[in-house]
Length: 80
Image (cartoon, rainbow, N blue to C red; front, side):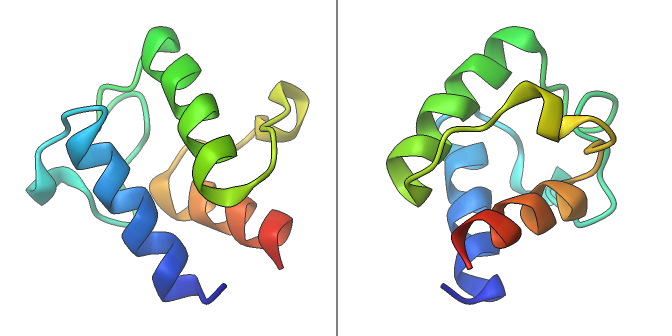
């Protein structure tokens, strides 16, 4: 899966499932502060990522993943 495909899938589920405004979805956006993703949203994201990318997010692997770019980096390392 290419980086572009990963970013597109992430963008789509953030807009459709988590209901984040499209203009907020930029690589340097902070997940909590800029996008407003809270712990309940994160539970949904875990399920969505498993469905769309075929792996489970492990909480300990998410330490330091605080921006959209880092989140996409994390997914890219798992699917490729």
